[in-house]
Length: 363
Image 1 (spheres, one colour):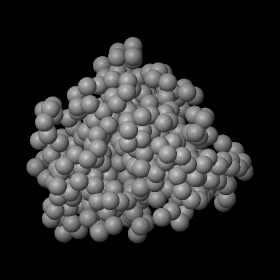
Image 2 (cartoon, helix red, strand yellow):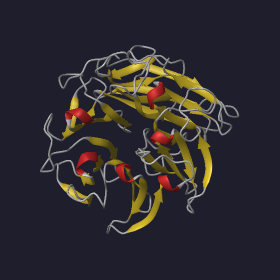
Image 3 (cartoon, rainbow, N blue to C red):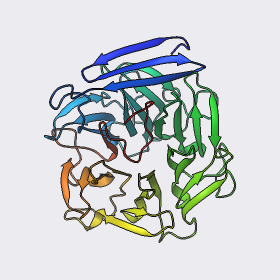
């Protein structure tokens, strides 16, 4: 996208404007009400990164797909996304992380080494890519290159925070593809100063710090812009606290909600590191032994939305651990009605509780 271009779209309830200012593209939106009952961008719909179906779907509460991106192809291109690990709605645009799929994970991938994507893309309602970081199918660490980008967070400034997993770094990029901040040394694995080990998510906090799920270091860290760790939960050498931290968000009450993937559980901890809430996804009827949940987000109504990856479901639970909504059928992977294949991420449209608000002055 050119530095001085402008895109203005109005779809139902949302008017999204991308305006180039000062070297970055700033997004604003006005929300006035529902677009149509159950339709695109309707508050309450669920946006899902349907990983091994190579797509993103937006579903309503009747399990109907009201919007999708990705034609299912295992070849990265203008109409496809491979191994979707993350998606979020930015106004009426959708930010998607195409991670790629490992060997043997996606039956449509004929390459014995797996199928790469390595892009973060911003698409409009019509499925057209309006901005992209990374090159389709190219793995690298050079200019405009990524290696297994597992998550992308749109910032109110218009910048994008990318978890570039296999490059062992979190990068903040502007719309001109320049890296303006980085945590982690490119290609270097470790747990020391400015080091990460297979990071899996990053969120910008209200205080300007970055909250990182440092997956293979079995920890969640809060770092400041000077690369200092100011808070940490978990220990690289103790998997009983966390084992494969897949995602973390800072809740309005100051607690941190963590997806403890290899322990198949969700935990909420206080600033003083006291566990106040736990949900174990293997305790529910029909669960496989190791579903490896990948995302848990707290909703405005107090429920928790969980991407229970290899159980092939997205579930919403209340504080008592009761399932009040489920998309997908447990251990039944597919791409037909109410079916998913290893969903990696899910968020409720219009609900950014605990997450980085992607637009300025977002409620």
